[in-house]
Length: 223
Length: 223
DNA sequence: GCCAAGGCTATACGAGCGTATAGTGCATTA
DNA sequence: TAATGCACTATACGCTCGTATAGCCTTGGC
Image (cartoon, rainbow over the protein chains, first blue to last red):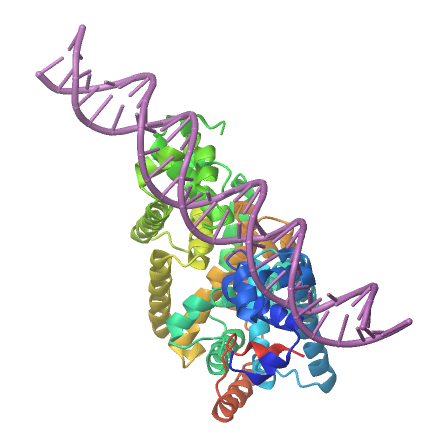
């Protein structure tokens, strides 16, 4: 905590910032209030004094981070600098921490993060139907898969970073990842003809197979 | 637990199966040994008797599930039925639970799951370089992103399912998702020309921007 | 028929958690 | 100067967790 700006912050802000960093790194459950207060350099009681409870602290962090992301994206939209999402971390380097936080929030079941996910799906759906209607007939599923994959990859950041040999939550690693992502978006991986036959086979399967769910019949896993 | 096959299993198998289901659903940390033993219909002491500790139980589950997936995939490779990964759950419906388990294991930091991830990246890398070398110049990053996105989407299953209105860990929902995925793989979303300019801009950024990491300077997030 | 062995239960211990509360010191204000 | 209020600490309560241990019941070999 050698950062001089850190000590200038009010204790409340220090607690919040420490919580954001730890929640992003270890998740809500994996972070204790004692961890947070120790990182902020205060006593556990002060967290309760300022935020009331761990859950209330988490909500405050959610609101703070998500509002910040929305504001930054709005600014970029106004300035029309939104060339590609991959550039964002270069313009606002500290946004990488916010990305990390939101990813954990999605996994931890934050309602605010879930609402942001839904918004992104709807926005993507509209973008597809307007700018690339030929890629699919199921706009909704396509958009949900797209947003799910993009945010999900960040959830797998440990493994992707290990495979790449560079942390994708650094600007350098993020750019290498964004580069591969751009390739991925601009070149078809499979023969379009294969896609047609695959979809046909799937609709055939969907008609014949009875619906089953994962995690509802533990006995069937045995033997 | 109305399944008659469930009661026929040995207590050890019941504990393991209950653990697999609960670990997949709530994660390791989110599951207590009392949860597992209650779901298995035994006393907490028996878990310790058979597995020694919670961590050892988890390792046993990892080994069991991952071996099972490898075996099934090998069978399908031998029979040459591997038309598309999306079909797998139709042939082996209970594999959806295994998918769910592996996804959680990746998020929870299981070494075995991480090793499987790495194998998939290497296999994908080889596949790309042989079958679709034109899609990218950075095979490794492309493969890592591809595997990360695919597994990551499953990590976001709650949100994807909510956006779709159907659980993607049911055969029905999984097929709809696989359909969108097929569209995604077989049609380019962006103009290839855009991809070129984007990559150029990125390499320019990479050269000028100093590397920064998320979660290392909490003070910078304040104000 | 007996008796060791192991599957299995009941109960408890110590640690770490979120939370609660009493109290201290330092401001600001009348 | 006295009083009021707030930031902050110290300490502890109650709970749940993983783990440990002592003992019971059933089974199979002699």
